[in-house]
Length: 409
Image (cartoon, rainbow, N blue to C red; front, side, top):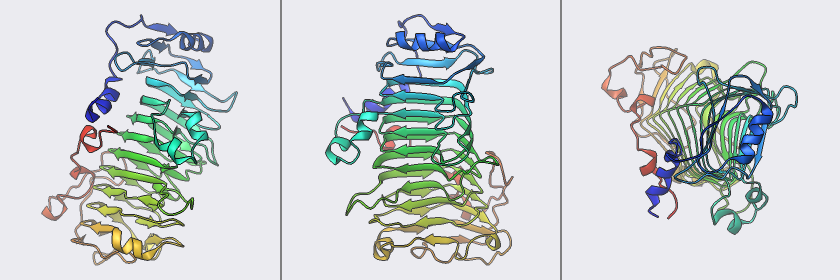
């Protein structure tokens, strides 16, 4: 099958099969679990408004490219609520499922993870490179859209969304508020698209990170998202801290573009990654740093370019770039690119960034972008200065996911 066709099939998951089983409407947790147990390729299960207990599915949902299985709220304007307040564990957990669409559902009060997609068998083989990197995951072609996840584990490694050793997963138009670990933890997954979501920090929750990509994950595209106070440390974490020898990068080929970041410790960090491009994002008042790089592994490539940064340098760390301990400085100086960013210090028009891993090429300094707001996904540049034309989230115009990386042969 042609490479591009594989990813196009993922987007076909949003379409219902013309000749599938009749939709099933459920109103209780027992009815939901019974419908899931009987689901066939092309089945659609619709949850009526109301409150449901958690749902754990172990391999029983196997759709087809032409007949995905759909689990959805019956009324998108009044979505069903999966409330974990009584049992306090995962809200929706899909193990080794395929060709699955889940949408228009609210999950709240999960103690562990809100929505969890995983291939447990592949996770158990995570340290066997051949087993890990070859063959398709049993968890693949999953579309999560229009889900709301609230109040997931106030502290610790408890994530609103977790995607573990799964292939071809899309998270789109979702909303999360309040988590302990990450808004999304992507561990060992391949071909992941995270787009047009809202990730909002909430008082009383730790919010260690926003999106955490690690565990030998490959080929992830994060675009068009809005982050608001989404991380104490780094909002986007590319890579991880494990030292497993030369060339054992925690992730490869990650692109972060067209997003808006408000607050948080730092918009992005590279930790043991092969590449990773952070470009054409809008960053408003980061709390500590502009970027972070390093940690006990080899480092290869990476770029921080064409971003719009609006900040108050008096409130940030000095220097406002964090180069972590045990980094190989030569690798950073040779491989990393800082290029074409626009820097606007609201208190000092003469500001120039210091402590960057390499000298910046073609940076833009001292040009007020005249932002239309300092918070909210509608942040735009009010200035028509030509020097700002190619910076910030508004400047991102593609490529389409299908052409960005269409997947394996």
